Image (tube, rainbow, N blue to C red; front, side, top):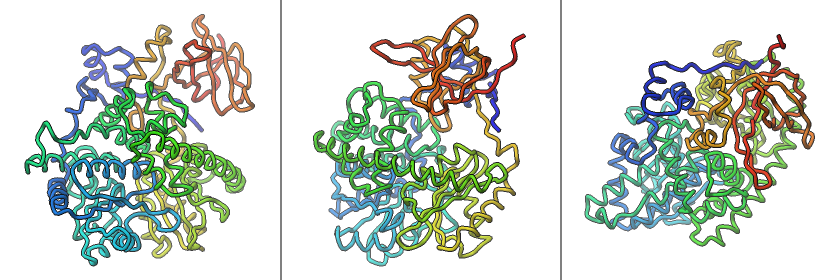
Length: 568
């Protein structure tokens, strides 16, 4: 069941924002998202939280400065998703700007597993002559790998944003806003954001040592395109600090000041960088980078972001695009298989969904879990069989159900069932023993039954209420598009009743509509759902500036539809 609800709008905040000169509709939208003062909407770099508020960042900066001064070899250990790739490219570009000898390694999802494992440590020592390991977007759970590195005489700096387990790494420096005792106000930094803060602190430390001054210091803002891409693609909450990072990166991209690799990714995805939006980062560039980590080796994505020559970057971006097309084809087959499994388990009678197949691709189960979760609104886990015979699972969750905490409870109730796990509230991964699927499925269901009410298992579409007729204009859409929307700060979604005057199916999967309201007519489209609508409908919708044959017009993008009230 799906319910349309209207977000509450605190009256004092709304009035205060209107008094500050903000358009009344925008004031209503902002107030419903927790904005109480216009200053909270500033996207200037001066509004960023100061690096000193991150625990251990001063120690990390001094350590890196000493490492650079001693000429020691740094190896950055990356993760194989978009956040990990951008964090790695950011770390290498930033460290090299400040005089470091730095290289990188990224584990192969299928051969090495996740994070800084003992095997990766050995490879770093043997193949790279590493003195210092710096993790990006991983490391907080790499207890054995860090112990191995220390035993081999290497030093370790962990930069991560994932939630820690019961034990923390020892004999290393950890910079993570989510580690115990860290007072950093924003707990939602992506891995690339954490590394950007470390670089800012390092630059400050080097200035204090008179390596640079204000005039000669490296321009770290030149790397904000990487920060914006990794932050948005990792679907972290866009709090005020993250909105600044994304807005600043987009500003640079739109002006053409970006890494050649990001420019190349815009080219192959058919997007105009001059009109770059958060949507482009999350749904065009991000998937093409992620495809390398899912099907092949994320080194290709990292090398694309590190390339200084556009033609070289474009060749690699083209290969990333090809891999992404292959990923989509594999995913389509997996979704058909999953649909058959789900038909037998009656998801409406369960609080969770778990699916598995020996034929599925290990790198794509996370996307599959996401698709299933979106369709059925249930916490979902999808499993494939790894090279070692273990079940490799990836999960996606719904609000009110903390996925990592749920896996932790399953592990405690069934010792030995889960080999390893980690992640966030909304996404997590785990490894099961080969025969553990049935036991896990029921244990996972039991946890969800205890935590979730039936109401929480009903999809709720939050909208910003009705929209006045005079807002259906291109200038109003431009005003909305000027903001940075995303997870935790969702783009405006309105709801109104319309009369359907005409409708036709496009390509057997979309619905093209002509709508009427208050004597005015509007073009609309509903992507991915060709089901015909009744004459009177209640719609949850967004506004879009549709360009066609050189003409731009207002178009309604239908997100949800249900029967409207009968005519009087």
